[in-house]
Image (cartoon, rainbow, N blue to C red):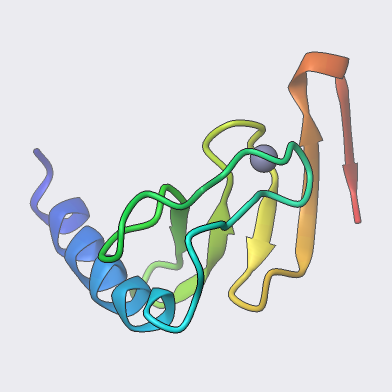
Length: 87
Ligand SMILES: [Zn+2]
């Protein structure tokens, strides 16, 4: 595994852990309604990082839509419909 990728992953998990503690066990994607809750420590969300490993937001592993850290939709991607657009 790429060493840089591994480090980013650890940082992201630490941040998500802090946020998830105040949430209930449902964490649905607003686009495809997939439940992104995994357990108390981790989310199924895919973190989006810039070159300096700052967290820009997250991506749904099911439909590929992208969101900011505040769950604002930034990129709508519905592959099963063949539609892609900006929110
Ligand atoms: Zn989704």
